[in-house]
Length: 231
Image (cartoon, rainbow, N blue to C red; front, top):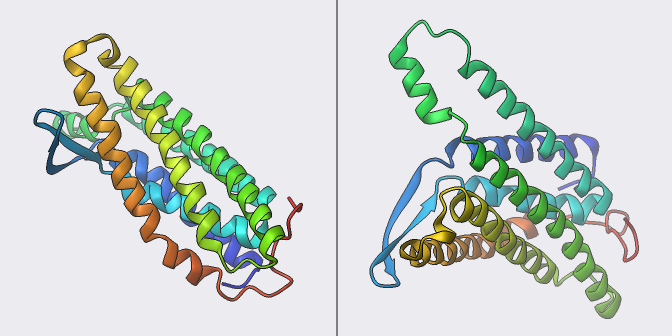
């Protein structure tokens, strides 16, 4: 991918769309049929794939355009997320011509505020960490090896650790506190299985995005490489 304004704009659009859609489809839980901890079945959020794309995009932007631009993309995503939530809530409270459609709308798009808070907290913590650790590892490896051929190291390390943060923050706030599972011993195994199951899923997605990361950053020239120390 060439380092130009058009490609940067396309990546930012994909990032914001993937982020907003992830919040829309997160209500669908995917049944895996996999049981751990005394038969507790692991379920996965429908947003898994959409959200994984956002980490790939910030990694590509960070590799080609640098840390400052990657952080700008994170801010754009936050603005888009808040704006989309505002529009959804506003539409929800407008007078409905069809009561059945209103029920369907609220069931699919109705905003549970504990999930909104959990989602925003997880997003900010994980994405900011992703950008920071990506460049921290990248700069150190490049300084040591003198090249950026081992891009898989900072690509995978940043995404995998970021997904740990996102999983813990989101599930802890939404289910641990929001549903009170932290205070109910009977739900502790369910909570733990959800944490482990969802992270394994995200870990696999992080591995699978590595070829795409290499593909999108393969045409780098000496001018497009962000050198250690640059932001």
